[in-house]
Each structure stands twice: as C-alpha cells, then as structure tokens.
Amino acid sequence: MKSIRRRSVACILSLILLCSGLLAACHAQSDRSEGTASMSVDSASGESGAMDTVNGAKPEELMEESTTGLGGNAGGVDSGTRPTDGEKLIENLYYKIETLQFEDSVEKVQNLYEELGGYVQESSVEGISGQHLRCAHYVLRIPQEKVSQFQGRTSELGNVLRVDTNVQNVTDTYYDIEARLKSLRTQEERLLALLEESGSLEDIIQLEQALSDVTYEIEKLTGTLRNYDSLIEYTTVTIDLQEVTKETEVSQAPVTLGERMSAQFHSTMTGLGALGEAALIFLVGSLPVLFLLAILCLVVFLIVRRITRSHKKKREPRPEEPFTKPNEDFHNHQE
Image (tube, rainbow, N blue to C red; front, side):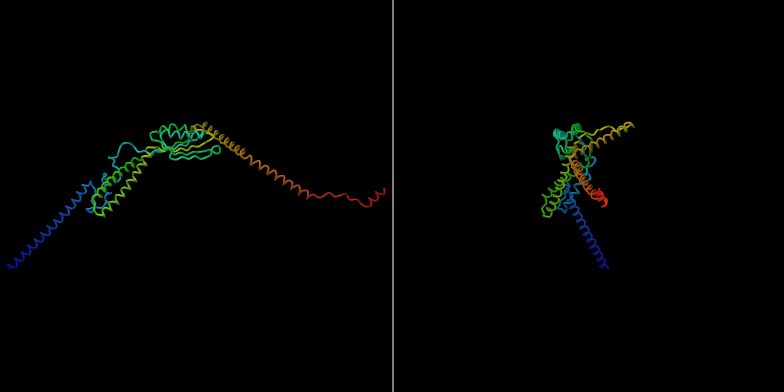
C-alpha cells in the first residue's frame, strides 16, 4: 500500500512539473511575440510612420497610411486647416459685337489685349473684303486684375449686343488637390528612405514600383494645379465680331399700349424696307441674266409665230377662177 501511494504521489508531482514547464514555455513565446510587435511599432514610429519592408510590411500599404495621416480625411482638407487666403475663381466672359468698320475693329481688339498684357488663345476671320460681310472669332486671355479695364473699353470695338459672364468657384477642389499632393510627396520621401535601407531584391522591386506610381500621381496633380492657376490668373474672354451694313438699334422694351403700337409699326416698316432693298439688290444684280432670258424668249416667240403662220396658210383653200359656158363665149365672139 505504501509503495502504491508513493508511486501515485510521484506521478502527480511529475504531472505538476510538466504543466509548469508548458506554461512557462507558452509565456516566454508570448513575450517574444509581443517584443517583436513592439519592435515593429517602434521602428515604424521612428521612420515617421513609414513601414519597414524588412519586417514583412508591404509598400502598397504606404498609400493608406499617408492618406489617413491627414486627420482622417483621405485626399481632402479638414475645415479647420483650409487656407483662407482667398477664393479660387475661374471667370469666363462672352461678347457679341457688330461693327460697320471691320478692319478698324479688328485692329482695336489686337491693340486692346496687347495693352492690357493679355494674349490670343484662338482666332479666326471669315469672309473676303468687298464681297461678303465678314466675321471674326477671338478667344483672349486677359489678366484678372485688368478685366475691369477691358470691360470698360469694349464699346470701342463696336455695337455690343450681348454680354455673358460665367464664374466657377474651384476653391474646394483646388485645396483638395494641394492636400493630396502634399500627402503624395510625404509618401515619396518615405519610399526613398525605405529604398535606401532595403537590402533584398524583392523589396527593392516593390518599392520602386510603388515609387513610380507615386511619382506619376504627383506629376498629374501638379499639372492640374498649374492649369487651375492659369485659368484663375487669366480670365478667358470670347468675342464674336460681325460686320454689318447697319447697326442694330438697342432700345428699352415698350411698356404702354402706344409704345407697343409704335414699336410694332416701326418693326413692320423696317421689315418692308429691308424686303424692298433685298428685291432691288436682286433685280440689279440679276440684270445680265434677265437680259439674256428676255432675248431668248423673244427669239422663241418669233420662231413660234412664224411656224404658226406657215401652218395657217397651208390649211386655207385656194381661190377658184370664174367658170364661163362655151355657147355664151361663142355668141359673144360673134357680136
């Protein structure tokens, strides 16, 4: 009995020692895991949030880390950090102008934008002098601070019939792109630092690919901002210049019954006058053709008349000679 009890006690002690050893081993492994994780976090924080590819991190994750570092607004701007140095406005102006002196107006357009420090983005002139009414189309870029001067001098170009103004506010989009560009540049610096520290070929290939993507995005956003700056600093002014023989009268809209009747009568008389002028111009311009047509019609008429008379003569019976009897002629001869 005593030997059995001793064996039981020895078995129990052995099991207790075995369990204690297993628990100690598990605890040590857990400590090593936590230590490794702590080292990874410390290494990441020491690189300003950059990921160490040597410790198993992927370069593609750097994009998410950079965007989340902007106050949780990926690719955007927080309302508290938005600059307040002014609104970003893109202004477009359109003018429809008619003129009696086409060459003079074209020269004034060129002198005006050169004097204000602008330039021509697009221009075209249609028509030939002395044959048809001509027209010109201009797309000008005028400095923003000189736009008011340009607007005050448009009446020098001719009779202004129409003015359109369009202003687009791109402030939010502009600052969003700036924030995104700043994030990408920070990401580029981190990738360059990791590329210098990396030693394995696989890590170098991944980092270079990520760096190429970031560089492409930086160049694209930089070009977009440069285009925005140009549109903001220079107002786009479109001018349609039309040559006319008579300027359009610009008057106030009639209000009373008498004014409306007078306006309608004036409009009707103007229309009749324009119709008469058009008919006179058509007749005078078509005189050579009308003269040839008149001669042709006269020739055809004479030919038809002659043919008609010829047929008429053929259809008429010939006159018969008077008939005398033979006895009467003989009797008359004897007498």
